[in-house]
Length: 626
Image 1 (cartoon, helix red, strand yellow):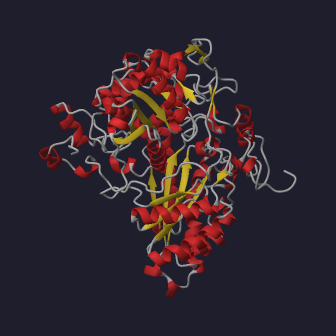
Image 2 (cartoon, rainbow, N blue to C red; image 1 turned 120 degrees about the horizontal axis):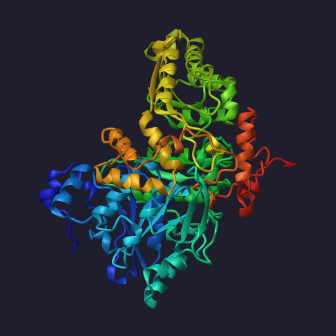
Image 3 (tube, rainbow, N blue to C red; image 1 turned 180 degrees about the vertical axis):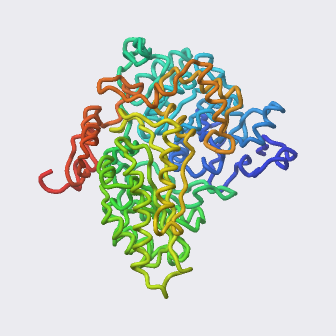
């Protein structure tokens, strides 16, 4: 009989006890005596966020298909349970078996967002695993990190034994077999890690040394032993129609952020927006077959009971089989009274026609992402979206019955001027004007349109053409937000426009973590020890503690954020190969400064380097002559 790790008394004290009891529909239970390898798969945030992450669902399914492996899940305990566990000495446990994470062979942490870094330390701490990798023995699990943040793992390198760089479907079987062999042979933990460092896609920080110049920039990063690779290339699954994907995703007991079936239709994006890290990391574009998607959609709906299915992609409109897939889903879902969610669509006639078929237009809103207020700046960032296209899309939307439009912009983009910022208010006003010009008075629901404009602050992420760019200070960001607000207030249709902006201090810290090196780890550790936790949640973010800790450690935030990089600077992440070359990114950076647009991958190959993987959009779906 499975015994819960938390007593009834504790479960009654805490918020949402269903976060911690496991045993959800489709969760995998195995005989621990028959599992040679035990894995705790962790998302370092609260259960509702972690349960919404597709990557963990895919890896959970993959690992549990291996007869010799039992993969369980673990999430960050919310602040109420965190306090109780520390007071009563309760170790962090995996949901399925309710056994301590410390007893597992691996603790695999997916790292999706830099502001979860202190939560990683919380998970290690509550699991009674030493925070620094160098202090661990075979008594502790191998701590492995994966996900997009591992494309600059250096700020948290001290806390991980291993990082898996790239997509998880390709090398984990080999990695697990290597572990089993090492344990059979009785070799040291260090020797296992030495062997692991030679597996493609595996980065073991302990075997690399960083040398710095007098100005604080990196001179070089080199392996400390022979046989360790100098550069680590990402792992990528090219056969996405014939690989692991869950037919029976775990169904939570409570409502989570993404409470629906998620169908990943493709990986990568053809668009080449210069600010977008995901658009570079997941090249080349690889589409799943229509047959696979139809089959898995029906299986997942049947096996979960979810009442909604969402198509997942960086740019769903670019999936070549979208019309056929939509027709299939509409036919099947209408019979079952299941909703269809279509994020990441471009606003064009086809997309609006599709959305009108699958959405209740009286309750829904449409989302545009112009990113910049002026055409000049949209060309700088290679957005590939003109004002006329935006306004035409808005007109079609209003004619189709939509009355609420969300617009997403970025502030602080390279070369941005006051005129570009004021263009945000101007564009919002023009979209509102289109509504009044397009929709007769007698057909206006509630008599007006609602435009919701939101701005985030630009962060120059690794492996993007903008990795050479400077980032704004907190004060500069806020000045830009106030200018945006004043521009909107000055518009004729201001009453139809609502404006929101992101927290500037959080963005600055995210920029430091995204662009930092190993010297940042001490700041993260000290801030955690002072109580920083759940930094992604505004009610718990303590910027004063972070600024105090940076000062104590002698770290200048501006060195990582506001300083523009020289073309030949060695970045902390340069020892990784994400598939696109640094030469390509530098060409795109120069084209941005020249306000030159690059065609998308289907129109013309830009020579980014991703064709070395031998498949995907690089070899299919292009126009003749390219």
